[in-house]
Image (tube, rainbow, N blue to C red; front, top):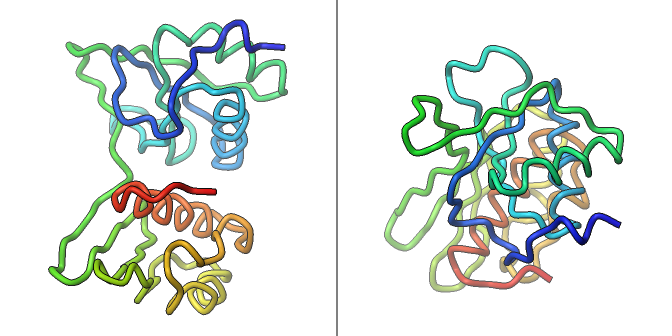
Amino acid sequence: MFRIFRKQTDRTPEIFGECGILVFESTPEVIQAEMVLKKEGFKVRVMGPPPEIQTGCDMVLQIEIDNSLAVERLLRFNGIEPLQYIPIDKNSLLKPVDLFHSKDYGKYLMVRCANMKMTVDRETKVIVNVSGGGCPDVPYLAKLMVGQKLTNAPQPIHNGATLCGYALQMAYEELLRQFQIELN
């Protein structure tokens, strides 16, 4: 229905021109909005809110400014109401914070998303460690994933049920992106 409004984009939103951020009340709303928007082909990236933003949860969605009206209509149609939309241009003092941090340990590459970390052997692409968070599903997810190749490991999003599982999924996808492996 909303396909006429969307811009065709690749799966990984790496480069944004002029953008804006959507602020939500809760993390589940961010996750739901991200899924709806990606399904419709919008370029979207989960980020940390600028420090100046004092409302909402600890994540925001970055979107292209050209798509802001279509995005807001699509979200409203799906019963998702952002608290606010903030346009961000290159001269703006407000900047969203990247949730990802990569650390090169030579043989190993670690990606941290929020407070979840996943470490992979660069040569074999085997997951050697999963850590962080305080959610009850983290030990279970670690047991499922450690020792598995990135391409064979179960996705955290299918086995976790918490914000930590979601952040681990994002770290997993970032590792796939860095190793240039397509997510099936």
